[in-house]
Length: 305
Image (cartoon, rainbow, N blue to C red; front, side, top):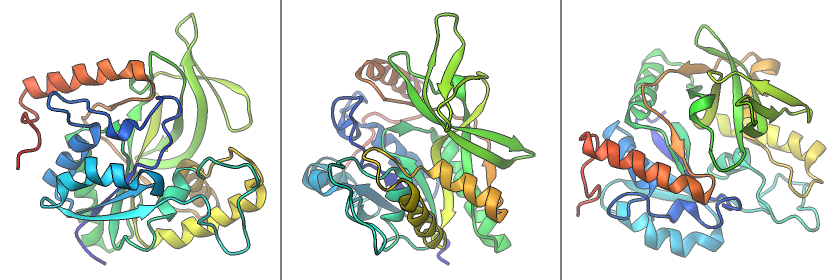
């Protein structure tokens, strides 16, 4: 197994709530995107390779806007999340236009990723310490000979949007080990300030502000792709007829923990998460980036040829 970790960036999302390709939207003072800061942090933490998971229809725009920035900085590759990329014997139901979700996006990279790799969302800011923690975990797991399986968690109240609902992977943790993770959708505060969402059974649930949640910052080894394929096939068997059903990473992780006894380490970080789900989130992100630049965490401009 290669010792140098790969950063797998999920950048194929449709951006329906944001109203455009937020992966390409400038956020920094010199037109830097959130992704630029993520790549910067990953390189500083020792990641040697980046693989972007994108859609064919944004390939040209993405490579011209994002990809070319890193051609001379780090090894690059691409994987494509295609609606028709399915296990043998399955087909796309008539009328479906939406991709199959984050689990499918990871599986899409099965031919281009070898060794340890971290998964992130292109439009989420995770913070420099989170990448250092993940890189350190890969180094530790490599020396110990174990297959890496981990996630970086954040407090739920620090991941909400003031402009609409969000979906989060709600985690139950025991002694730094992930016990369960459930995708909770449509999370928002009510008029009294309580945090409410809808669980996988469609039931409204109240959530504690300090609940640990997954923001799709996962650590794996490439051996996991076969398992992703197996569980994706099972997902399609029961949910493949749906026009909007999605194969989520948290659902996959929860299954391999409960059914196979997998051990997933939960990593702590001093970093703060922030991201853009709605257009109204952009000023908040810009303000926080400006504070980090002023504090000397990042140079400006971030990218210097």
